[in-house]
Image 1 (cartoon, rainbow, N blue to C red):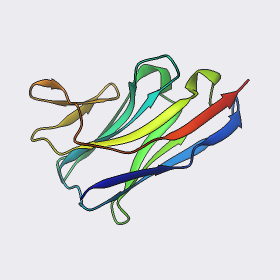
Image 2: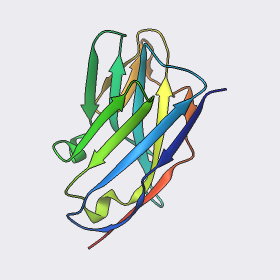
Image 3: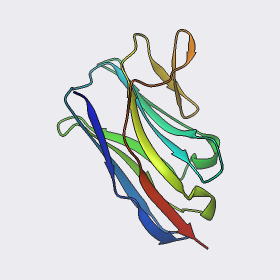
Length: 135
């Protein structure tokens, strides 16, 4: 059974940094798209960053609002996905979720994963970790 468990959330002041982690168990993803999503109170969930791999080449993508401030990465040996968040802003406040898709031909763009039919709904989701940024 695949499980994704996020950690690293917390409360920091604007301008600060946090690093989120997503530990995957039950499956070792080889060809995949993994991503970080977030949902602020009263708002729809949005894609933040993706990392996709065909087993040879990795690619990353980001939503415009975090480009240059956030970095997604993965430790393949430990099967952990990271999101390094710098220069945090109050509008980054949200619950952050890790998700993964192993659909054939999956790839990332603009903070979302896509398959041949369009934006992917993702196969696996974590339960989220809360990030609060104060001004």
